[in-house]
Image: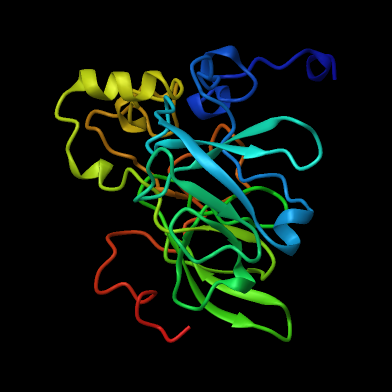
Length: 267
């Protein structure tokens, strides 16, 4: 009874993934970032007609693979101009006019509600909910495809860059076209210095040390006379955080063999 009331000494160290909570070590490096990249806040002009903006500049945002377009709109309610940062789509250029709204034309870079977009159109920076200003297909070279509209339910089915399907409301907005900066990963980094600078502007997540290369105090896969896991590599979703390493909640493991099914189904 006496010993149970004493504080228990824990064995081993905290696994690195546990340390990635609220800690200044793993914070995102945001000092040089250019700002939040979002669609315009939804307003009367976009819901009923359209509003015109002009691309003032196309800039690089540190830590982001895709370029960003600085677009200027006239404010409808005050004597001023509003500058928005939008995802740059392929084919954009400075001085180009961008149209946002229900009655905008179907051209690359324009922002339209999905209800005004025909099936088979390639879109990007799609909202998940009306007015959230962009959630899906925002990375460099990414795009979503409008698969089908369900007019009775007021929903639209999308095929996302991952190959998965998603049903969203038909009045959510999306940009037309493919996000610029595609093919970025085709060129190999080749040397550690390039990887160092790539991740230095993102966050502290490189280099990554494998679990089997560590000691038993630092990782469940560590230790042993040869580098081996010594236990199943899969791990349940509800395991305690110090043990939750490897392939978490895996439905399947191993190499993906055969053709991707998602590209061929009728939906």
